Length: 159
Image (cartoon, rainbow, N blue to C red; front, top):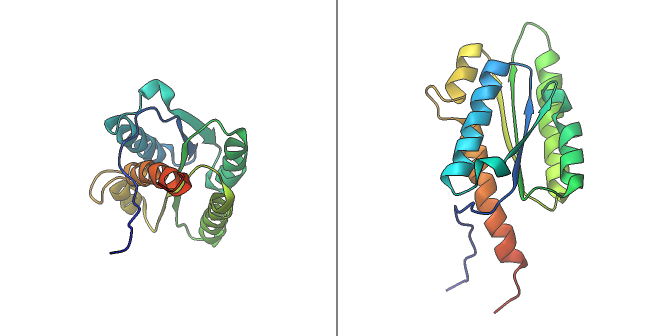
């Protein structure tokens, strides 16, 4: 049988960061709360969580780059909300945020997860921030927790 390496859901002792946009604040605040709740439920002390606020989702990769480079955090969750409007602005902002975060995550020493909501309507965004369709901030934090332990298992010396 092949060896299977998986992460666990224990976050005790972690120093996570949440990189969040301020734009669409009502929705993003719910995502931040969801992410923080996931970390604390899994054992992280509330005082060990740091939230960095960017003006909008377009700026998330810029802030993320500096947070990653600081090497202060064991995991980083990115949250924001981009809601479609009547112009192509949505496509540019959502694409730049997703591509920028993904590019940085590829080489980051700590796991980086994506909890940025892209929605056609404000109602859809609220549903993804905890009203009907779960909380994408919570989900992104749980993925980050699992990834930390998976990274550690991969990097551990072979027994």
